[in-house]
Length: 444
Image (cartoon, rainbow, N blue to C red; front, top):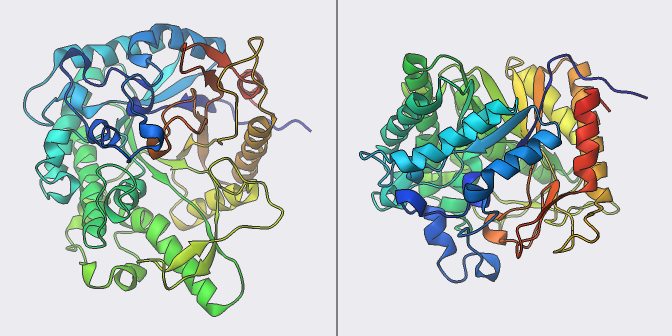
């Protein structure tokens, strides 16, 4: 059976600056927290760094040619804040900015629409030295940076994203310390979460003053499903949902925070001033949703501070990073967002899977049947959500290229295009050929 997507549905792929660009200090760029974190021994698997990554900073033109060959209609990428402002604020760096101008111009020349993310986790290290996202001034820093980016590119870029996945920034970077900047504090995490949302709101306000097109926010959402009917597991799933999903959805769409956050953080929780909700709730033009899996949840009093644990589902398929493959949960999530949050315009800004691929392509070919099936099933799940009324306007596969998977280094591959890290040779995988056909047909 053929599944056709609506006319004008946007088909794209996504990447992030530190994961693919390489040359992190080239042309006067400043150090970022991820440069610093990856150069700290033991922080990243195999002590991998983004110094070379996919060498996209130098190979961007051929990468754009590859995107055109795959038929992509849109490309979501992020700007490295410290390329534009090496110290985070103040001095603008024209040489770093020129890279993004070349990239955007090259995309438009090839008929590919740029979708620009302002922040994908790579805070300038100079701002981290001033407290980073713990500093209340971080919202103003971010708005100033955003204005510089708007002035640079808004004449050519029609879709902007403020932040990518604030939950990951707060949870991985400030609560558990497994991502940059590597803090571990239940006191810091809620403050960082709120400052991130304030920064998002300030950037939206700045865009309403200076911009001419559309701006949104990207959240990674994960349905939390109780693993049993036991009351403690049901309560655990609700805590997990409040912590990962509603902590960010509610301030943006409902001018509130979930009451469970006070229980989760205890003395570390401070109810934000009521006046801040006007800022965090600044109207956005679209919501980006990143979906990978669901969380099959049980109560675990030892799991600080949320007291939940994700358990395995016997017989289910799992990706190479241990995430359960559940396309039906994707449909349910999209329908839920439509029902509970006013059916906002939605783009799937990331969806993809890591499965094992060989380091080197054989005979110019990389077969990845599990990733291809994942893609097929999750596109069908998006189609099912649209059929149920969800206002989904586009889909960006994660990721275009195999890349530095943050603290996992180069050990996991999410790309639909294989990268040989020794030679930098790109080889489209079977999943890329499948996706090209989906785009051509506008359907499955």
